[in-house]
Length: 150
Image 1: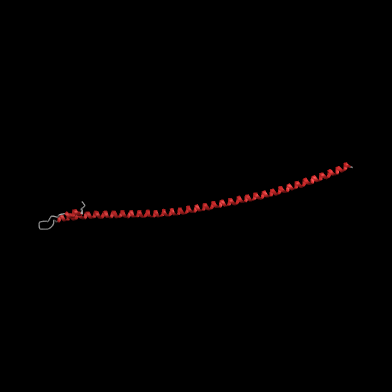
Image 2: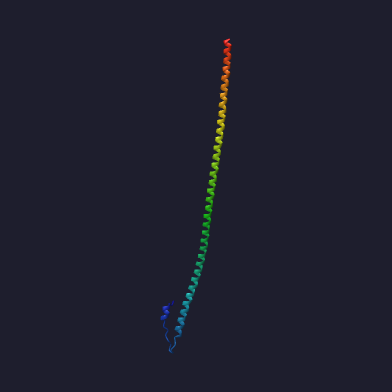
């Protein structure tokens, strides 16, 4: 039986014949109080052990939480770096493609100019050939006319 403070305040110990308390009743009461205190001490010890175990678990989870938070920060930083690197790489690819495209355009323009120059040269050569051929034919026609005119 566990005594409460109310039980102890209402407790009445009978007096023995010679105006004293009954030793048997006092010894029984003390034995029960000692038993209650032992139970309370055992309960307190068990609760302290549970508190210690729970505090260790809390500490473990705090360490785990800190580790996870650190991992998240590292992952975020890594993701940002990867994103920045990808953007840089994409920009470099675009820049290289633009440079190659401009080179292709420039090469094509140079080739077109060369072809145009070659065309003009051939056109002039054809004109020169035509002019010389006409002059030669005219000269031969003149020679033939003089031969037949005589």
